[in-house]
Structures are given as C-alpha cells and as structure tokens.
Amino acid sequence: MPIGRRTFFGSVSALAATQAASSAAPELEAELLEAIDEIPLVNTHEHIIPEEERTSSRIDFFTLAGHYAISDVISAGLSGDDLAVVRNPGAPAGQRWRAFEPFWKSARVTGYGRALRIAIQDIYSVDQISGATLPEINRRIEAANRPGLYEEILVRRSNIAYSVLDDYWNAAPVRPDPRFFVCARKFDRFVAPQSAADIRNLEELTDVSITGLAGLKRAMETSFQQSLEIGMVAVKSTLAYNREIHYAEVTERDAESSLQSLLRGSGTRPAGFRSRVERPFRPLEDHMFHHLIGLAAAHGVPVQIHTGLHAGNGNFIENSKPTHLTNLFFLFPQVKFDLFHMSYPYQGEAAAIAKVFPNVYIDLCWAHIISPSASRRALHEFLDTVPSNKIFGYGGDYRYPELSYAHAKMARRNISQVLAEKVSEGACSEEEALELGRKLLHDNPDALFGRSSD
Image (cartoon, rainbow, N blue to C red; front, top):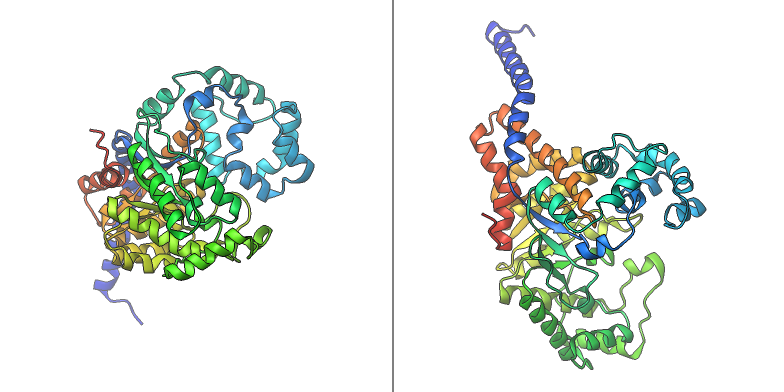
C-alpha cells in the first residue's frame, strides 16, 4: 500500500522527535542524577552489622565478596575444596584468589559483581580487582576498619538519612545505633517453631510458659511489646525461605492440635530441601502468622515481607510469589504491606497487586543488584501502573556499608535513567521527574517508617 504524504511526514516527524529525545536523554539523565545524588536516602532494608562488631573483626576482600557476589561465583562453578579455600580466612590470600578467580571472571559483570567492583573502586581507590592488586585492596580495607567508618560511608559518601535494619542476629530486641538505623523485627520463630526445643527457646526468650496455643500467643505478644519499646518501625518476615507464603485461615482448634503434635514430637519435619515444601505443622504456622498480622494491625506497624528471589543458591522460587499473600490484603486492609525485592521475577504480579490494593507497597530493596536492567524495566512498569506514592526506590540489603554504598550508587543511576526516559517520552516534566525521584528515595518510605530526616 502506498504511503500517503501526511503519513510519511508524520513518520519522519516522529522519528526526528525520537532521535531528539534520545540525544537529549544523556544530558538530561546527568542533570537528574546530579539532583538525585543530593536526596538523602531512606534505606528500606539493611542487615549491616554493628560498627563495633565490624571494626573488631578481621575484614578483607573475601569478606566483602562473601555477601552476594559469592553466590554468583558459586553459580558459575566454584565448589568443593576450592570453595572451602575461598571461605577459609586462615588460608593464604593468594591461594584463595587462585580458587576464586576462574569463576569470578564469569560473575564480575552481574549486578552482584558490579556492586563489589564499585565498592572496591570508589571506597578503596583500586580500579581493578586482580591477584596483583589483592594485597593492596586488603591493606586498604584493614586500614579503614576503624571507628568512624559508618559515618564516613553511610552518611558522608552514601547520603543515607537512615536505614531500616533487620537485626536477625538478635533473638531479643536490641535498639540499633540511632545515628544510622531504625529497627525492623522478625517474629518468624514464633510463627513457625519446628520442635519442642524451639518452644523451650521461646520460653527462655520471653519468660512465658508455653504449653498450648494461648501461651505461644502470649510469648509472641511479649516479644512484640518489647520490640515496640526499642522503637520497632516494621515487622519483617522471611518465611519465604522456608515455605510457600500463602497463609490460610485456620481455626484455633486446628492450630492447637498442630502445636500439641509438635510438643509430643510427632509429625517429624522432613530433611533437606523437602522441608521447604512439606510442613507438618502448617496449620499452626498459618494461624500464628494471622495472629502476628493482627498485632501489627492493632499497633499500626507496617509489615515487610520477603517476596521473589531468595539469597544464596537453590530454593523453591515459586514459594515466594506475591499473589500467595492476596487473602491477607483483604483480611487486613488497615495493615500496610511492603513487598520486598520488587518480587523479582514476579514484578508484574507485584505491580498488579499494588495497583488494586491501597495497602500494598512495592519495594526495590536488593533489586538493583539482582539485575540493574530488570530493575529499570520494572520501575518503568511500576510508574506506569502504580500510584507513585507506593513505590520505594532503594534498600541496600547488605551486611557491609561499602556494598550498601555501591548499591545506592547503582540505584540512583537506575532511577535517574528511568526518569530521564519518562521525561523524554513525555510522561512527565523534568520538575515532576525530580519530585518522583524524591518520593521514591525519601518521602515514600519516610512516610511509612515514620522518622523524618529533614
């Protein structure tokens, strides 16, 4: 079919506009990035260990590589004796590097690998990670491992206003360093005990006798109240690592029966990977999770839930689909649910849920290092789909501040690129893009977690 004059010139105009937008995007992106770098971050999710523990520990390159980057190196093939050498802090650094290097070559360009490289390059001023530079990297890490490190990296370099800390290493509530952190607390041990020994540990933790369901609930309530007293701003659940996250409505009678079976030692838990799909005490778990969300509702505390990809190597990814949680969103409309990790690879499901449930938020914590490109695509989709006040742009999700810095740098760059593209395609103005950037990185999570940093 012949192309009409109007159609032809319309196509040429559209092409010219596209090319103009494309050529303008790098300059616009740079301007947005400069402005977005000035936004103090509210970091929605961290595991950063206390500074005193960090500075009193031996830290080297392999320590930093041991959080996330090592998972991709293992996926590339590092295993057996070589893996044991890499993980042995007493082994010579050169020997560890020789075991690590062949597989690092295949993992260095992943999101995890890139974050590690950025941290070494920016914080320790070593451009390349190699056998030749490893001694200098380790020397500089050791020299910097002093009190004041967190102020330097988290505040001055990263411009993080505060971070929501999952202190999973503390069984009892402990107030984190208020200069850097507010507290999220996990109650998974109360939701999913797997043995009579687990119940005894809960009794010791809370000084509450547990002979039945009422006692277990009192123990959870005691720990919840203690957590509120040390400033808990969110409940956190990572049960997606252990089981599928649909929590059915279960009667007290059935939950009590399940607990009594556990106390008698019947209903043995399967070993190994099967424990993640075969849950002999599931009625108890489901009922106790609903009790936990009821406590969150009563006290106005938001709930952060792990969805999507699991850390480490090997798991049942389908256990963590965000659609498993839908009944909770109906049952507890007053509770604000923060869905972690953009639910990767189920980010489309997360977008659909957050679009239709006012009490559901999407969080890109961990996401920018899982896959920078998937995070950009997801953020495009989220901004097209979900009201912009329900999207959180960054959570470091690391044990070490150097890597949280690197993740923040990647997140700011990703968000600037997406917002520049939104401006170029006419979805928003540059001023609106800057407003979106501040909402994603500061205002939205600050509104939920309740600590103004201005």
